[in-house]
Length: 352
Image (cartoon, rainbow, N blue to C red; front, side, top):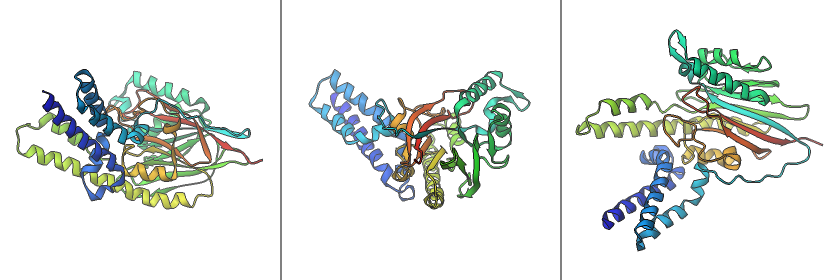
C-alpha cells in the first residue's frame, strides 16, 4: 500500500510542477498548461491529502508533498487569502467603491420564458441594496434582459454607459467625462470604458471586460451525460475539449494585447474589473498583475471563488494600479447568476 501511495504522490508532484509552470507558458504553445492552470486549486488540495497520509502513516516520503508545496508558496496567495495585508492610507484620500457582476443575460432569474423566479429576484433586490454606497458597477453578459433587470432595480442615481446589444457596461453615480467601447475581438468583443470624475480633482478610468468565453460548459455536460466511459471516442472528445479551452485562453491573451495598448495611454489611474474567464494561475493573470494589482490579494478572504459551476474557481476580478490603495474586497454570495459578484473599496490620493 505504501508504494502505491508513493506512486500516487509522485504523480501528483509532477502534475503540480506543471501547474506552477502554467502562468509562464503562452497558451498557444501547449494545450496542457491552460488546463493545468484550472486544475491548480484541486491539485494543491491533493498535495495536502498526500501530506496527511504520510502524517497518519509515517514515512520518509513525507518530504515529497512538503517540498512540492513549498516550491509553490507564491501560488497560494493567488487562490487563497487568509492573511490580509495592512496598507497605509494618506490623510487626504478619497474612497471609491466598485462592484462587478456577470448577470448571465438575466436568464438565471427566469423560471421559464414567461416567468421570473421570485426567490432569485429577491436575491437581485438584496444585491442592489448592497450597492447603496457603490460608486461604480461594471457589468458583463448584460444584453437586453439583464440590462432591463439591472435598470429596474438600481437606484435612479446611477447613470448607465452601454446598450442592450453589447454585453459589457458601466453604471456610476458620478459624471463620465469620456466613454466608449474597445473592440478587442474574441467571442465577447467589446470592453466598455469610461473616465469617471469622482471629485473636482480625481478622475479614474474604468474598464469592464468579459474575456472570451470558453464555450465548453454545454459540451462538458453532454460528455458527462452521454459518453460511454468504455468508448474509444471518449478520449478524443476530452482532448478536443482541452484543445478548445486552450484556444480560447490564447484568444483572451489576444484581447488583452488590444486592451493593454488602450490602458497604457490612460491619463488617469486605472481600474479593470470583470469576468476574465481565466484563473489566477493562468498566463493572462500573470500578464495582468505585471501592470495592475489584484484587490483580492490584499483584502480578500478565504478562497474567493466566483464561478458557481465549479467549486473553488475564481474568474471574476477587480484590478487597479498603484495609485489606488485597496481597503476591502468582498464576494457577494447572492443567487442571481452562475457567477458571484465581487466588490472592492479603494482609497485614492487627493491633490493638496
